[in-house]
Image 1 (cartoon, rainbow, N blue to C red):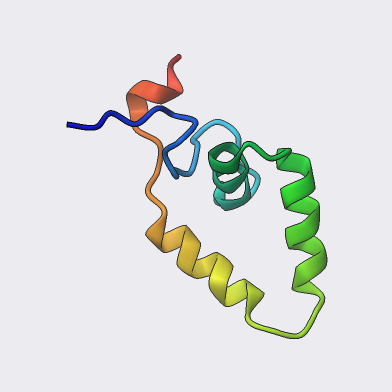
Image 2 (image 1 turned 90 degrees about the vertical axis):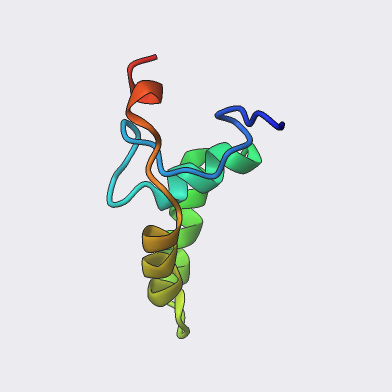
Length: 72
């Protein structure tokens, strides 16, 4: 039986969101600076490609953080 910690689980946090929490969740999971991830995502959206589609898919696929984790 494996237990995951909040730092290693890929979830969308409930308290640190701007739009859907995708950038914040990725930053927490990999130990990156959340502002840097958000800036890189924003800059990538102006380039041609399917970044918005990938963001939307991540929004649907990455689960929300459990309610109990929000209250810590």
